Amino acid sequence: MLHLSGELGSGKTTLVRGLLRELGHLGRVKSPTYTLVELYVVSRLNLYHFDFYRFKDRGEWQDSGFREYFNPHAACIVEWPERAGDLLAPPDLAVRLAIDGEGRRAWLSAASPAGEAWLLRSLQRFSSAS
Image (tube, rainbow, N blue to C red; front, side, top):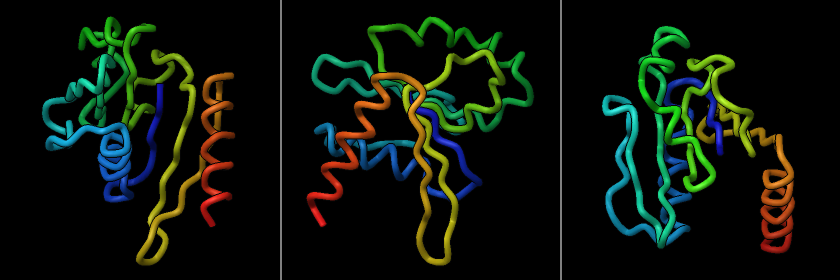
């Protein structure tokens, strides 16, 4: 599970678009702000992109029926995870984005062994590309 936090316009959905492109998804990537969830099938993977911005409190997440999506057979990316409170399990990886002049700044933190491994591979790939 990937959690994306940051103010409006900080690039959360843009980051998801880039991740899906990197995974080979060629179709349109919509913001789930109004639908709350968008499904993308990448190879045999069901990737669910959630946006909880419109939730007023954690009870709305409880009533949403989304709990069943968060299972070992799915990948979940969640924008505005803080709107679900402590009802979501800790993410494998959390990304906090902020507007920084004309660009963006990102802070990444791993909360599981899978997240730590992904973060390490990504940092190695990034450092070898520069």
